[in-house]
Image: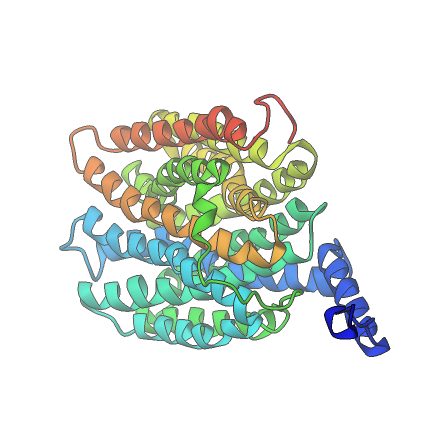
Amino acid sequence: MSDSSQTLAEPPTSIELQTLEEKVIREVNQDEFPDGGLRAWGVALGNAGVMLCTLGYVNSWGVYQAYYQINQLRDETSSAISWIGSIQSFFLFSASLVGGPLFDRYGGKVIYPPAVIYVFTIFMTSLCKEYYQFMLSQGILGGITQGLIMAPAMAATPQYFKKKRGAAMGLAVAGSSIGGVILPIALNQLLTKTDLGFGWSVRIIAFLVLGVLLVSCPPIRARLPPRESKFLLLMAFKDKGYTSLIVGAFFIFLGMFPPLFYLPSYGLAQGMSPTLAFYLSAILNGASFPGRIIPAILSDKFGKLNTFAGAGFTTGILTLCWQSVEGNAGVIVFAALFGFFSGAIISGGAVAFASCANDAKNIGTYMGMGMAWISIAPLIGPPISGALEDTDDGFKAVSEFAGVVTLVGGLFVFFVVKPLSGRKVLSKE
């Protein structure tokens, strides 16, 4: 047989062996989560700062809702006004459909352009006088830019943590609680205790947000090399556990937002002074701080889905009791309890969706696609509640609607999502 018929593979050169070894080491290191260290916790703290300025700002909507009802938009119905906050919340979550995959492909640098535009939208809100102006600046553009900032930050943290993912995400999401305390108190004080007026009160909030973002955005960096596959991973929807989690989370979020929007208005209806009513959002968000950290830490031990389902179940039961709350003391206690038990919903949902991705480089896309579907819940929940408030049953109808759908969502996660995800109902996974 001739030499030409014998095609033998040449052994790899030393350079090729070194390149192959470096590739293997790199892939192994990608699978190893730091689960701590200065850089990892720096990302989590940066994430917390971003959440303070985005979801924390949205959580202070109750102050805007109550203020608009008695000032600039007093001729509008409560349902119509709530659409501004609902649109803002909708785009906050739906923009994750773009923000999450962008982070997976290009890293933390994608956070800077929307951060600049977001601060600009708050300044523009300070100049608004008509309904459509508030809708455009605060509702639409504000919500979109918030989502494009929040999604990369939320996708970065899980890349650094696995065993301690719940604790890290709890710390990160707790930033929104701090924002939900600081921003409404500051805005309330500026609006009611000074002669600055609406314009400069909102501009001061804009400068505060700008300062926090200047410190928080730089630490947001990807640990892994960019993903070069398709922008969206539609194959994820073939995972029954992932798709059913979206359904359960939708119902939980549908019922969670009405109390966030309407507690100050409910306080006013109970005879509470406007100043104290505006503080209800701060009380709620202050109580949600331990509610977001403690259950998130426990989720590392007792299971992500268990914690998320438990948050939905307890929040639903509590919301059904809302209709029986009377007097200033009762409303304040309810706000604190609701803040604590609902606090685990955001952190629990984020951890649950992040855990659905088998590859850490896909976490942003998985979270983004899931949050995009869920965004419909905060879009329709508050306006439905506003329409129910305008009926003869008033807040009783709002309480029953929000409580039932949240309770259904929690039970769905526990009894449907867990089995479809390959877990036993009573397992700690």
